[in-house]
Image 1 (tube, each protein chain N blue to C red):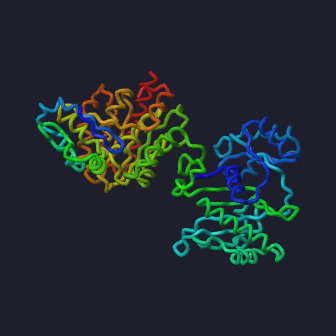
Image 2: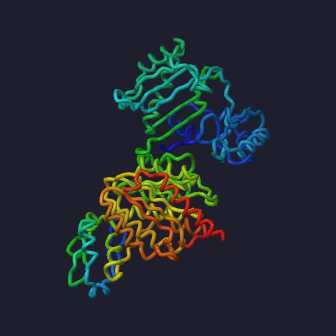
Image 3: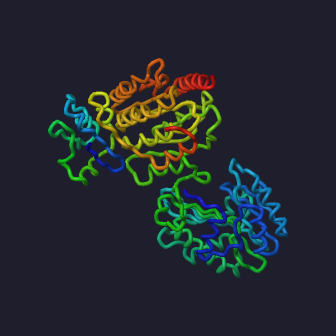
Length: 97
Length: 421
């Protein structure tokens, strides 16, 4: 599992699913919608060519890799975008989301 | 602007050395009685609410005993003024008023000024709006040095203050000017400040508003949200503020619009830009729908910020639908909205199946953005799918508020009927 921490989100990539991916749609989306921080290394997405500070500086939190992977790749990416206070807000109202 | 209630403003005035009446706030009749006892003698009971015209609204009363103070406080605390419930009263010593005056420091945004401005009049008290223009003396104040004594004397002479009182008034005004600067106020209005029977000048009221941009310099104020809110921030306001507080990558604004979380006919409202937001409100007004909240994701915000705002808007209980109102040909790259919408709707709609979502997205990268949304939501937009009431529109409807409103109304009416069946 690869975890990429951007300024306010975490991108989780289950790289065990990436070997059989033929599209590498995440990399394409990253270049098209953002600044192309994802590179494909040994058939898997990686940011190893960048330092942590470069990832923080260049990452734009565009969410595009998750959507691209969901529809064109192997459903390997999930992005955690927390909203401070929202879980408590919905819980207090008995809502389940 | 972050606004203080009267008693809060007076506490800060007192700390700055300005004369204020002896008093303290109370939240219950018993606290009011104790405060009146502590003060001793006749007191004023003043409802604390962010609204003008309190005297006319009947929430400022004079009483003679602690028991009367408790009774009047009980009456005032049960009132609502201009939609704002009153949670506190200020119990304050009754002043021996000889004459009332008006002064206000505001920001004069006129091109030739762009500085603080003092407005001063000897006709203070109620109905200041009705005082003749020529009786209100106005003077721009140097933003660096503040009001100087010689300028203050000049202003007081123009206002007709007698010679024997010039120094007293000028000293009061210069000290207030320093207070205005010290607290980074946007507005500091004292109406009235009074001359007592002893000849003392006292701040009998206080309207203090702090410049939002300076709130971070004043942790002592304990202001949680540096925004223009009509009252105490709601839970949604606080969540909305957390999205923006440390993230300046485009706008991701969210605030409550007084929605009671129960009434029918409210929709989650997610406009893109201020002008667009007004058109979106037209769309809702034309068909009798109401916005549960206000939002804005413009200025090319990052996808994560758009997602956060949309998720909060969609998470409000009992809303009858959701409107992404992009009533403009936006310059920002709309695909960030598209990706965010796909992610958030795929998370929310399985838990609120059938909720109407009218998505209007126009402008830069529009075709690709609409394609992202159509492809990303296609599997949910089936006849029985959780996204069966998603409708996606582009530039053909960018100014057609009537059509968008009518679509949302039709879908929300259907949705409500389905929920109630």
